[in-house]
Image 1 (tube, helix red, strand yellow):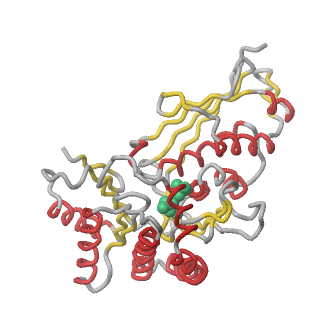
Image 2 (cartoon, rainbow, N blue to C red):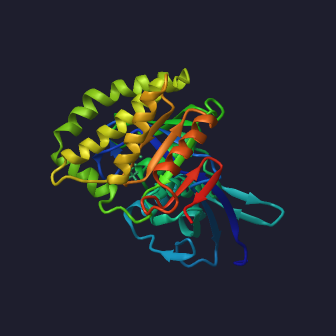
Image 3 (cartoon, rainbow, N blue to C red):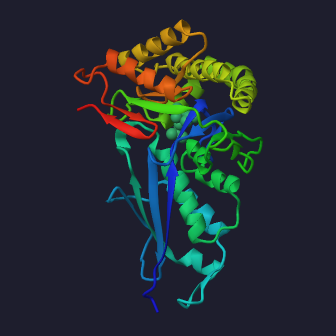
Length: 354
Ligand code: PMV
């Protein structure tokens, strides 16, 4: 019969790098010039839900993002689909009388429906959650036996940062040594329970799409920035070790110092790129000043900040009390009537501007 459909649904949160990935040594395989470390957000915010389905009645692979059909012809989708199919195994549902063999997976087509619970164009790392979820859901559908790190190497080929969203908690993407990318994958450093005092607040400075995509920005930085070379060779390897230690010891002072310094260095690399790339704006800079001033006025740092390829601030407060004080400060400097911030997204709740 051609009437059956087998479906799998998965949900994956996005992740925020505290030691940044910036620069590829291989653009097709997406191999980075340095290791990176991230924290995966709690699944109630900024996550992707993806349903993948297979049926003999499907004529071609198709995908819908937030209800709108998108093209799967891009190399990144094709690479992910091909790699997952290569690992597919037999699937049998005796009750329903369905059997799909390893060989069948090469011929059957899939339909993919993906939803982001946040605005896709908001420059809030939507591709990270998206490709991680796609790789995971397809892996489950096709009974792939590879472990999550091996799946992360497939998600990596969709979007580099996606490989880190296969795990919760703190995650390291090891750049790897191999030319074929087999050892460029994510490993979990600590699970989500290890340091659950931290509260992540995202100040949405602008929900417009970024002007320079990470792909072209990285290419330009690799080609023109000497600071990038220095950072990748001399700075990041040492920072990775210190960051791993800070996470292991739940040492917020070191964690905050390293996170802020690494975000600032990433944006310095962007400025060192020719022509320069500006991801942060005046509001981003004001948020940095507010955080720095507050940290200096206390005995110990209360907040870490980090910015990706856009102006939105990701603020990591040391605990609930610090997050409440931080929100008070943000509301004072950026009252709901001001146009500087679009909204806040806080640990377990959102504060809309209006
Ligand atoms: O995976 P991409 O191509 O979206 O690149 C992500 C780059 C940064 O977000 C700026 C840094 C990072 O490590 O996530």
